[in-house]
Image 1 (cartoon, helix red, strand yellow):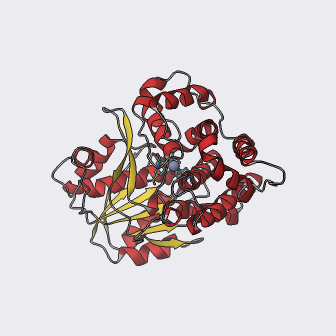
Image 2 (spheres, protein in one colour):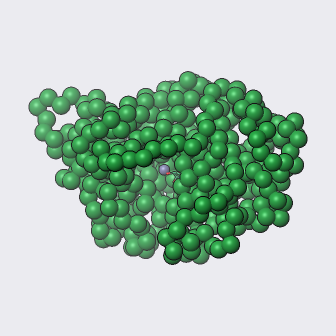
Image 3 (tube, helix red, strand yellow):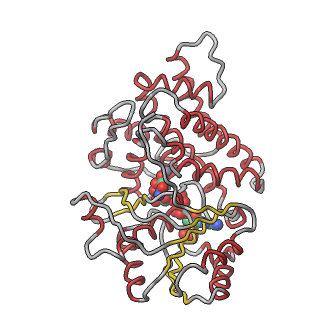
Length: 385
Ligand code: NZQ
Ligand code: ZN
């Protein structure tokens, strides 16, 4: 294991029907002026908006609304939130939604306290913000685990980049399965695949020898796979969906990354695909993973073969490490098909993209089992078509 210092600042409330009581208890600690942030309208259709507004009223808060946060939130949308925070003297940001709303608010919270542009601060001066407006998250769509960390993925439309920015950690996160039961099944599955991807990408980091974090990771992957299948069998299975919510959190709260240098090369490619196409994150990963992993078999056969046995239950008898690595990639590809995720960009509705431009702007990761070249990323993207 690498050296590490671990601190986990997010207080998590988890369970059925816990949103109201936990939110009321938390809101007491903050000032009167609340920014209520949400997405494109699902909260209104599901009744979550009415319930949150009545909780905020009961708590005696003054509410400013920040609505219309889109999937793959843009830098422009962040600035809109910042203007609202400054104009209305906001004391506390309450993000109600999935990864997009939750990420957008992390950067609003940081930018509102800065006199300079946060993109320039982080990407030109290589410095991070230190002051934030406090925030709480009510998760209505799970999978990203975005409420568990301080990284946000923001699309800068002018720069044609979808990149990580670092903002604030949430003071608390509310994971109430009842607030997520209206998620479209397609989003549940692509979200859960995102969690599986986070676990796999973490597993592929260094050091290569299996450590305790990796063994917890293997259990997390088995759990996600089992509960995706259970959810598809019965979409109302709250037990399966609750487990997926917690697995998503565990994959992104730092636990699986302890003692490791992480990889996340597949994510870097998918994020740039998103910058160019505004595609669904989990679906993009589903198409890319098997194609990327086939390119990595010679270098990653040790980890792939272990995943074949420990996660996918393949009998290792009379098989070489290379056999098992190949079986792992085939099994993953079959699973993606089985759960109804796309296997090509075409199936996602992406028919015409500039693979060279996407490859050129993709961040190359050092921790990756195989250090990819720009040319190989372009090849991978073309193979995904
Ligand atoms: O916008 P509304 O109308 O609310 O609809 C949303 C959206 O269309 C809908 N939805 C949310 N809760 C619902 C619901 N529909 C019915 N019932 C509910 N209870 O779901 C759709 C997707 O929401 P979104 O937040 O965009 O999805 P997701 O949670 O997958 O987040 C994706 C974003 O997170 C980033 C992705 O890149 C992408 O921008 N990620 C953030 C990460 C992080 N910060 O740690 C890690 C991930 O790797 C990922 O990159
Ligand atoms: Zn992801």
